[in-house]
Image 1 (cartoon, rainbow, N blue to C red):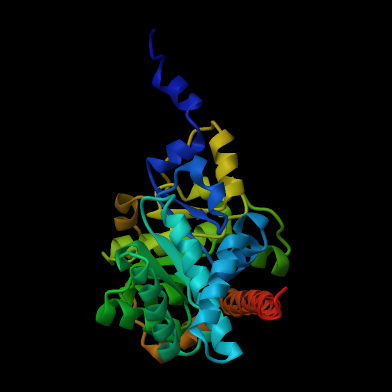
Image 2: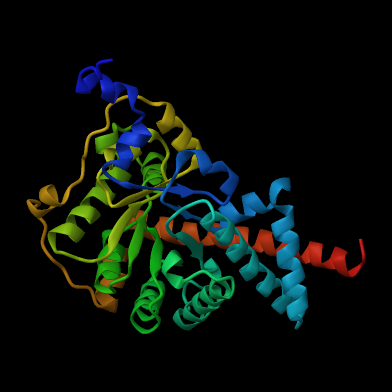
Length: 338
């Protein structure tokens, strides 16, 4: 049987499999039962994804175990809830690590986004919980908000503790430059949320993938990092459609929801490499340095970046509060013997 022409073979291969030849594919979900079939290398979680998964009947055992742990640790109600939350985030991470060969990203509470020392302390606590469960810190990325304080927390965790960080809620070029200078392991620039902002705040309501403001932003960041040889890698995140994903083929990593992974696995159109080190080296970009005051000014000049960062922190914080409320109610019912 002849294998046919290369073009025909490519048509038979899914866009997802083609994408994997150019980019490390990561699953963006707390619903670890949804990722098996797509064979991602890594997985990412956030407070909103953990909240969604914690409400699913399939994961009630994890929630119950975390509550048992939190109550056994004792202390005030607040401490029991905090310990339960940490255990729950790590428990989801541990289950995910049974499904992926690489790393899981676990997020530090967004309410700590402006407190460097508290972010470092929380990160080390999460790493300790992973290590207690037999998981090396090499398999964990700690997610931190890309505020100035978050970026400096990432710098300290990497330099002093050998903890790998994933800087999230990244929207502005200033945030990306500061993360590169802090030598964090990885950044997660958000594609879809940038598109959302432009649709809401400008007259233009639709974009071709290569013109999509989120795609343009991540492409510039990737090119800047590669042109100037930064070690920090780029993981595009928050996608609204498969067009955005395919327009960033060649990016170091892309973290994609199970819904879009499913679409890509059914899509048989050709995927071509859009980003590469060679193209980046040829880009016309100038190297910049940002100290704290310059970072704050440059980030503040980007209205979209300012609004989306603060909005993202508020949303993750709100979902953390919802999860805490759910845990408080469950602890109360356990104490009341229900």
